[in-house]
Image 1 (cartoon, rainbow, N blue to C red):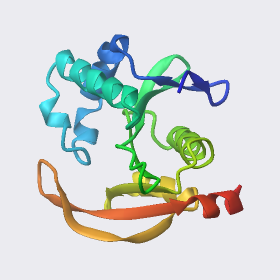
Image 2 (image 1 turned 90 degrees about the vertical axis):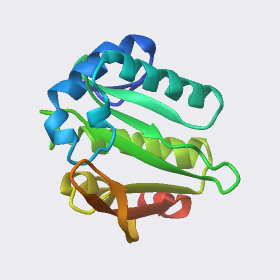
Image 3 (image 1 turned 180 degrees about the vertical axis):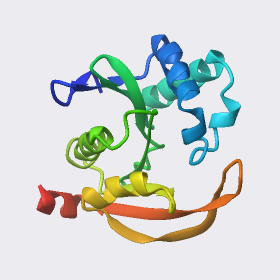
Image 4 (image 1 turned 45 degrees about the vertical axis):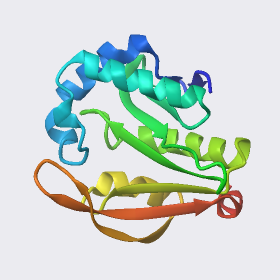
Length: 182
């Protein structure tokens, strides 16, 4: 994937080494909010941790096993979205995402997820897209609900966060359903 302009305000750019600094700064500014829902936040204490993540994401992408992009709002990094490892045999993929402080509630990530779903189901010809998020994370859950995903179930104590285990809501969307929604 290449730079993708969503609208006059939003752009997706593949993660690259030069994004380590703005990404670390965004995580650092948003640390208290992000740590409620993301287990890796407390382990990101320096820019080198982000640089390592980006390097691994780029390797996964070059191996055709996933893809991660920064979501840029008016030239500023606002968050990250990515395909988790693609299951080519079963033609399915999971999407993960997060937004930095101050960018929530504006529809930015919904627009980015829509692009990722389109690309996965229509361009890559996958059959299924899945999104998992903590049941208590209402803003994150609103995105798949807004886009027509089906709540398929809840996985109890699916993830250990700094304060406790959280349940995950599992949302799925099939290519045939997405084509009907379009």
